[in-house]
Length: 510
Image (cartoon, rainbow, N blue to C red; front, side, top):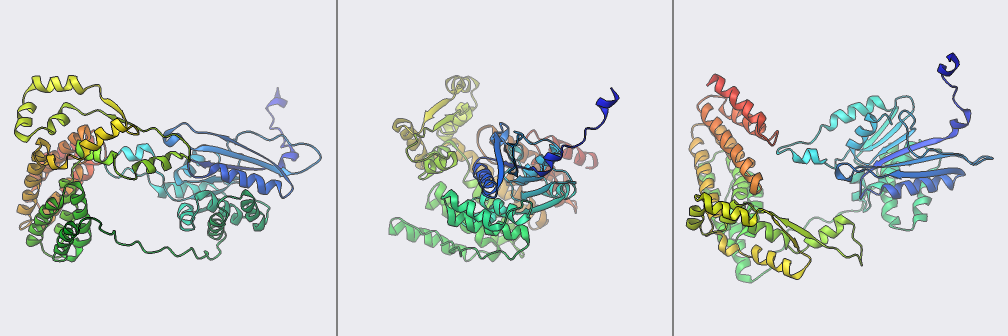
């Protein structure tokens, strides 16, 4: 029994086996990277085996790619199919949080593992669900990697690849070569890329950039990127001239607000029309007339007035689903190739409130106040509807709905949004003469209102609560700071628990 409990001596034949694991999600070329590694090993007198296990978690999960290699000998080696905790020589992570997961799973150990990781982020669903900034701390992962790995090589390998016209698999392959963790010369890695025969030139450029980042060499010059040209207006000369006249008004605004005002003007004109863009500038010029240096009030208003005027409604959603280029973008994201049949199904589930919002303002208000009529609409539309927008009939339905911009100004929803905008903006401007910082924070609170349907209702509720809290602290020297804290609390969770706690704190001393 005692003999069974003794630690078994390591098999000396395992000493020459190099064990490499990689974590990558779809579109990052993990399979290509693995094939290159396998190729370079075999072409340099090694036996090699590569396996992969696809993930099934959020973002489809990271696929675990695993390669074992050993110098050719008399017999045929028997390799493992999956990495084991504490038994990985090289760990490659194609995204920073995947590096963190590899550490948590025990694949990275300080006695042997070289960790190569890209520092860019591909956000998880849990990060995207937070109303505000839900991005997990990269610094914590970097600190853990410094401790957990024997060597930690990191850089934004995704950007290095993009700048050189390739994908991250090529720059990570270069980082692997530059790390010196494999006993093969640089030329052998480059030859493996050339033998693949696809995208060779771009892959080699990205490879060399990754190699330089890992080895400490000077980064090679990336091809010069042409400067992005200002979007060229196209259309009838009369409309183009009218838009340019609106743009000319922006030059009279305070300089810190001009860039955001340009973006805001384009947004509201795209949302509705040129006259609507003129109304946007009228509101912004009113703010600028009451502002003073450093013009924070006008700069913030340029962004949030545009957001308030370009609200999300059924018309805008339908318009977005029929925009030129959307189908091409979906095909690219799905990896569809020429000859593939792509079908797109839209799921529409408007609440009774969204249906009533399209009614004429007075009629819609009467229906919204009548529980029986709202219940009827709920029964009619509660099941939702699926539309195949790749079919002509469904596409035309969405196209007609998205083209109802001319009707929008008559709807109940537009009347409600404009009334809300007026009250919010008047409140901020009334505060500006006596508490400028608080006025700026009230303008910023508009960030809480976004989306449509349930998302819009939750945001509006939080917005009202934050402004109620701002009223409670109005007149205090720290009123702006407390309003900022309330807004940040509202963005922490969907349910608003943090905001309720912050409001309770204010009530305790007011």
